[in-house]
Image 1 (cartoon, helix red, strand yellow):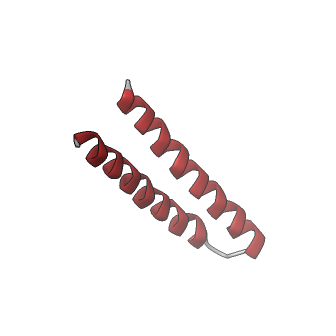
Image 2 (cartoon, rainbow, N blue to C red; image 1 turned 120 degrees about the vertical axis):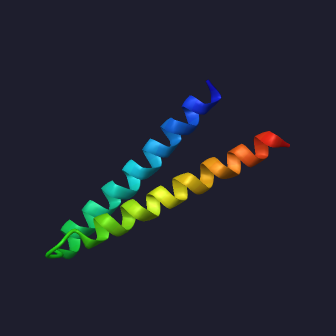
Length: 60
């Protein structure tokens, strides 16, 4: 059950970063969704970092 929470945390983190990227693309009126892509990648890396950190803490 604990790992289900981690999956939900990952999904929410990635969703929030993609949402922020889309809003910034709309605000700056970019021709391509560069900020959405950049924020999506940043969200994935942050989500993975948080999960790995939690897994390492659980091993102790």
